Amino acid sequence: MLNRRMFCGCASLAAFAALSATAARAQGTECAVFTPARQKEVSPDEAIARLKAGNERFLSGKSVNCNLIEQVKETAKGQAPFAAIVGCIDSRVPPELVFDQRIGDVFCARIAGNFVNTDIVGSLEFATKIAGARAIVVLGHSECGAIKGAVDDVRLGNLTAALAKIRPAVDATRTDGDRTAGNSAFVQAVAVTNARLAAGKLLEESPLMKDLVGQNQLRVVPAMHDVATGKVTFLA
Ligand SMILES: [Zn+2]
Image (cartoon, rainbow, N blue to C red; front, side):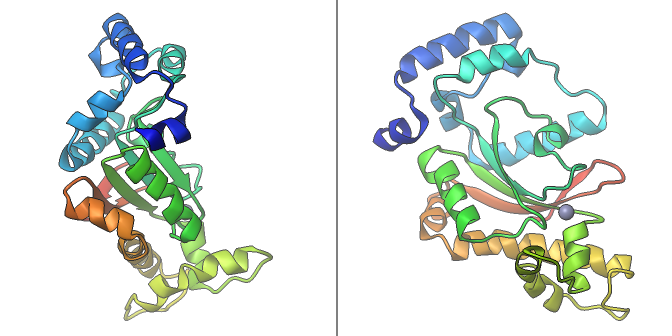
């Protein structure tokens, strides 16, 4: 609790929970914001299931319509998101939209090519160990420009160093065709490899999160978003 107060400014968790309960009654349960108590009730498997259900709502055009300003008020004193997503900066893959989530539901770390470095690992340690998120999804996507850039070894300003972080996925992916961005099957395969490697790296580089997984407090799952359909396919 000490850490949560330090990082989140949760001066009064009880008041926060009471306010949220009142607002949830006003808005309906599907619009209830996550409180520490509610977050605690969600298992890692249930957190993944919530994201899957959210993507199904998104695909069917049945995203939940909540009063977001009410949710802003309800979460003003603290946050307790149930999951975290590591995604690409691609404008077609906004995690909150494709998983049909709202204010205070999920942490999002976004970086071109959804790779993992020390800063991302540290951010996710905060999201899980300190703030209590129960699952992390590493969300790759089809037609990723960063993956294409890494495949073709593009060199441009600071992008060169960023794309170098994706090279291990390029090198680890086999193809009988050209190893160029013109080979769309290869680009897709590299994106899948990259999401899997990033999910693995999160735990390799974080004993903290590895312990949480060992205690069944956390799941880390790679997934792929299809920019042509909006569908997210979980890879584990
Ligand atoms: Zn991308």
